[in-house]
Image (cartoon, rainbow, N blue to C red; front, side):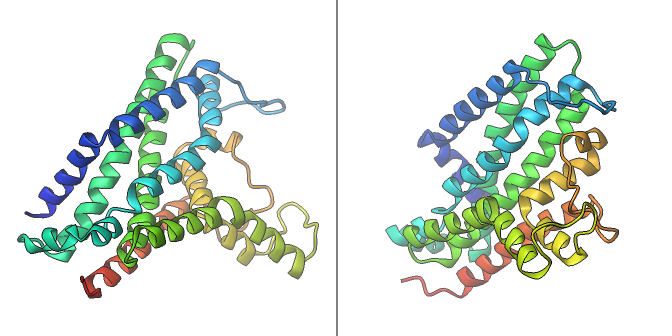
Length: 280
């Protein structure tokens, strides 16, 4: 086997277990519903620079996608390696002409492909609904947003695979991944608010947040995703504002750097732990 073979096996296993089919159904139902309701955000007092219908769809998809994509990434990725170690099948995989590097990155690419296929199916269905029923639709901008969502999914799967490769059991890998999910999506803003209150005070005038605190808040991958979306889609700024986080040393393009770090660092730690682990 090789990297391609491990990746292919992961993808085919998801089809055999109906995981991929289930995810596709989930994303298609989810995104077509959001596309169908055509909820227009309140843009009073502003002159939208982009297509209002497309902004409405992106606005509807924004928050749910920020939570759903990481949840799916964790659920498909946490057992990729830890599950093999718990069952003992990892010895069989490594007994074939595979290196640990090929196994690790094959798992990462395979699970990312599974999540990406579901996202593409769902977002493609939403685009089809929009093209058929909307008065106008910015397909190119929506396509860029879809590609950015795939990058966000890769970061989430990398976190899950990193935990999976670092733990001996699926239970510990799941606990670690769920903890990270909770910190990123449920507690990060709370931690930021506590730091602000303890160091600065409860109220901070708009635009006067200290640079270090604004940067800390922006290190959250979900916030980085929003910054990256603002960078490639200027009109997205109209529905994603950070009035308290404006600082001269942070620009939206740095969101891509943060996402890259969330891809590389968990993956590197996970691979290092897996490469040194005793497989018993």
